[in-house]
Length: 108
Length: 119
Image (cartoon, rainbow over all chains, first blue to last red):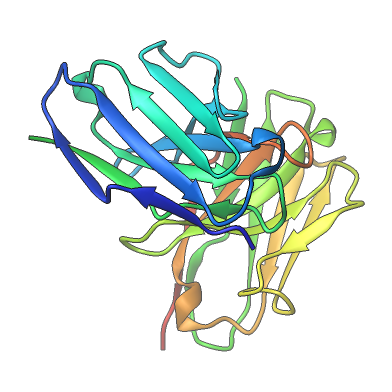
C-alpha cells in the first residue's frame, strides 16, 4: 500500500499570499496518478488536480500541481477567501487507492 | 446536471447491517467506474471500495474486506454498498464518487450519507 504523507498539517496564511502544500509518497506513484481535492466544512470533496498537474474542469488557474515519482506539490498562487479549506492528495495508480491525511489552510 | 445522491444511512447497532445506495443522473452511468469513500467525524478521507463500469473489477480496503459488498445496477443507474457486521469504527459519512476509468481521479462526488454504529 502506498502511504501518502502531507505537510504541513496546518498552513496559516493571509488572503493574497502563496500557499505551497506537499504530498510525499512511500513509493513511486505510477504514471503520476496523483490527485488533489479541496474540502470545505460540511461539503463533499471537490477535485482540483488530476494526473499530478492537470486542472479539473472549472478550477481557477491560481491552483497548480507539480511533481512526479514520490514528491508532489499543490500551489495556490494567491489565496482567495474561498480557498481556506482542507486539501487532500490521493494516489490512484496502485490499488488500494490511498489519501493523505490532509493539510488545513487557515486564515492567519 | 451531473449528480450523485446517496441514501440509506442511519443508526445501527454493532453487528448490524445497512445498505447504502447512490443514484446517478446526468451522465452515462454504465461508462464510469464508481467508488465509495468514507470520512469518520473530524477525520480524513478513507477509500472503501471501487467497482469498474461492467463490474469486472472490484476492490476493497482491508478494513472492510469480507464485511462490505459493492455492486451496481447499470439499468437503474445505481451503486450500492452492502455493509454487514458493522463496527463502531465504521461510523462515518459515506460518499459515492465517480471516476472516468478504473484508475482515475474521482471527479464527481455525492453529498454523503451518515452511518452511525452505536448501541
